[in-house]
Structure formats: C-alpha cells, structure tokens
Length: 204
Ligand SMILES: Cc1cc2nc3c(=O)[nH]c(=O)nc-3n(C[C@H](O)[C@H](O)[C@H](O)COP(=O)(O)O)c2cc1C
Image (cartoon, rainbow, N blue to C red; front, top):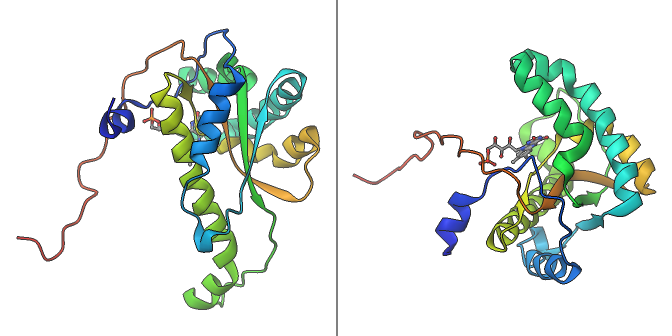
C-alpha cells in the first residue's frame, strides 16, 4: 500500500476482533509515530498503552463519559445512532488495547477583553502541545492501518477526564485523545469528504 492508499483506506473502527495485538507490533507503531513533528521539537506528549485490568478500569470511566455526552448526542443524532454510539462507549468495540495520548497540564486565564495576539501568547504552549500530539496521533492511525489494524480517534471521553485520570493514576497531565486499537471486525463505508475545502489563491 502506498501512503495515499493508507490515508484514504483508514476508517474509524468501532468493532474489533477478539484477538491480541503482539507487543512487538505495538512497539513498532509507537516508535515510528514518535517521529511526528512537534512545536520547537519539545515532544511534549506521553502515550499510555493500556490493556488487561487497567483497560477494565478505563472502560468504566469511558462508559461514564458516554453518559455525560449522551445529551449532546441526542441533539445531533437519531435514536439508533445514539444507541450505537453509547454501546461503543461501554466496550470501545472490544478493542484489546487502548492508547491514551496526553500533553502537559497547563492552566491560564483567558479574559473576554483579550485580543487575538495577547490570547495566543498565553495559549501558545497548550495550542502547540495539542497540535503536536495530533500529529503523533495521525501517525499512529496511519501506521496501524498499514499493519492491518483499526483505530478510532476519540475525544468525547474527555467528558470524564477526571475519572479516566483517577482510574489510570495520572495527576499531572491533560488527555488529548484516546484511541482504541485492534484488528477490525467491520469495514465501514467511507464517510464522503467535502469538496469545497481547498482554496487556491494566485492560481488560474
Ligand atoms: C479530533 C477527533 C475526535 C474524534 N472523536 C470521536 C469520538 O469521541 N468518538 C467517535 O466515535 N469518533 C470520534 N472521531 C472519529 C470521527 O467521527 C471520524 O474520523 C469521522 O466521522 C470520519 O470517519 P473516518 O475516520 O472513518 O474517515 C474523532 C475524530 C477526530 C479527528
């Protein structure tokens, strides 16, 4: 598979086979993913690779995030889709491994009277850390796809961030995303991509 195929074939997988992913395969993916670019090369990210009883604890917290997120889902989707999504929150599709991507926990105050530049000066570190972690995550997703593994990039569990951190014993970091990973047990159709998102300036 070439890179274009890997990018286009990757789907968010929400149902996984009951099959372990060998640790060597996980290591290969993670070591390569760490070659993502990062703001000022700070590499301000941490990835937790979670399975077994740690994963059971995590699932409890994610299920709670699902409950907190349900009212938002009900506004966005029909009942059937809400139920499918809630089920995914309960078992993460049976994924044998879950990756948790963290960045440093930073606190700052944004006031409504702040201009864009002043605000950016304050937010810069968190903004850069989050984007850098996102580059790492996309690497993870594509590397997994290249090895026949499925993933689902998830931010909704941030609705129960405190519960997740407590379950994992993490106190000094902020969750960027969580990523269930395993061999896919579904091949969902590709959601269509919008056509009007590239804007050429200075081209005829
Ligand atoms: C930043 C981000 C957050 C996401 N959060 C969730 C999530 O919480 N739950 C979920 O089921 N999917 C989540 N997704 C997956 C998107 O729903 C999915 O990427 C989108 O529908 C396109 O489908 P595809 O990934 O199969 O191309 C997230 C994706 C991104 C990039």
